[in-house]
Length: 236
Image (cartoon, rainbow, N blue to C red):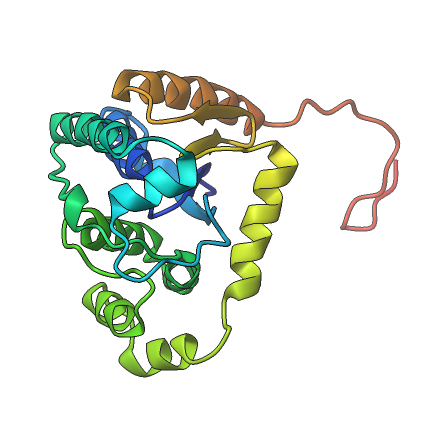
């Protein structure tokens, strides 16, 4: 029996993607049919051309990239840290390392193929926003992959190649076709979309609405009988 799909476009550099993950999970936990929902994480890079400057901290990066003052950047992340705390997440933003997320997304794609997509997302979010780890560093990605159950040899082969790059690009292409310009972005049953880290109640409402239609689609066909031949050779 097939499950209802929820596709989530996310970037592990995005604090609201981590917050949105928690809020979605809280909404899903309250959903009566939660065991019949299949969640798939999709790749999306907020800054695919990011080339980190040496010794640049997160506040300096946002000052440069967004054209805001350092004080504004610090205040913005202070607010984000408080929002994260409200859903049980402890952010250590000053320790975050500015890094391109492409290789992290390749790891996620590899993990997805093994049914470990959610585990990879969670681990990468945690090391980036809490652990102060470089999500573009191969040793860090290797240890992260091992920690969620991926094989060391396969991880080393992936990191030493361009494997899973096309899957990352494909997810991003689908996002462009959908008009996605920011993440997190949730698509339920290919019919309903939620943009941003909405409340658990909002996610629950959309899950229930999408499920109602998903169930209706599974009802038996209404057949109008006419002349036909059956598999036993009888035609009438």
